[in-house]
Length: 414
Ligand code: AMP
Ligand code: MG
Image: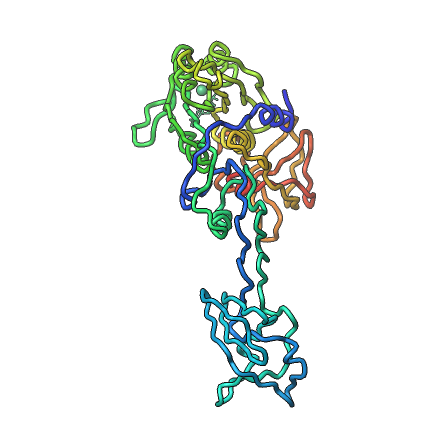
């Protein structure tokens, strides 16, 4: 069995960015991945601006100002934001507002609270401002010609704002990854249908579809496939045709009713199987050949395949730890590792497992970690109760007070 880090390395080394770039409206680009660097065509802000409501002055003209001897200046112009400023006449101040262009010649803003307007319309100052005070200099945020967002960036709300701040109305993004997903198991029933003897609800369909939606994939859900080799092979062939990745759930162990592995071996290849982790041991990775109609079109000849175990906690955890980074890499994202936190365990686990365990844990009020009492891979409740996973190395017992590696779900679902 492979160690988790080794297995992830194999998966990521095989991932190649899907081809296809779309130009889309920046307003529609949330969650998409940039196909090219965004270079700023201008300075931001494009001119020196005032960051206060107040008066633009030449600071040297106020050098002698004091409470006992205020310096009074005439107000020579008024500059609201969005309006042009004339050069500042010597011996005068300009009335300015937040976001206004600083008149050429002025080198500081005095905020209005620090100035007093007299009846004759002059404005008096009791202290000299430092040169540059309350001025946001041209290009302070962004310099013209600089890369503000590199290719491979996943577009967050703040990244969209940054792109818009340099005037980008459209962005070049990588096309969405096409994922086919299906679920194996004669026991599976869809919610809304009556539950027969021996049956269970297909909860994984809901979890996995939602996880795929968060990654902004184009998903084809092929539904529930019976536990038969021919049906599994047929569905794999169908799935390979139009998709980058085939994701399956269940049937990937070695039981007589587990047909996914032999079906993939018949329709393609398995390059990795079984990882020394708990939950989630029987994860499989490989590829399925595409039908001949696709060959010659220049498309890749295989669709990637990842087979997830059927146990609900296992499929959830293996998706987060393996499928998510793999899908992000297909979209061209470089930084796929979640942020891991060092946190205190407020519990004791006497015996370590031979495999790398991922324990469902929750942050308590004392900023330590508690674990869910039932860590069975069938107990989905633990994933709702928890805030994330403790990544516990093989054969490692945990004593209370010890610092452990904690990966929050928020990091794994970004
Ligand atoms: P398998 O990986 O097919 O051996 O399934 C392992 C366990 O997970 C069995 O108890 C299955 O009934 C259960 N299981 C498999 N697929 C699903 C699913 N889609 N939703 C909920 N439970 C499942
Ligand atoms: Mg099964």
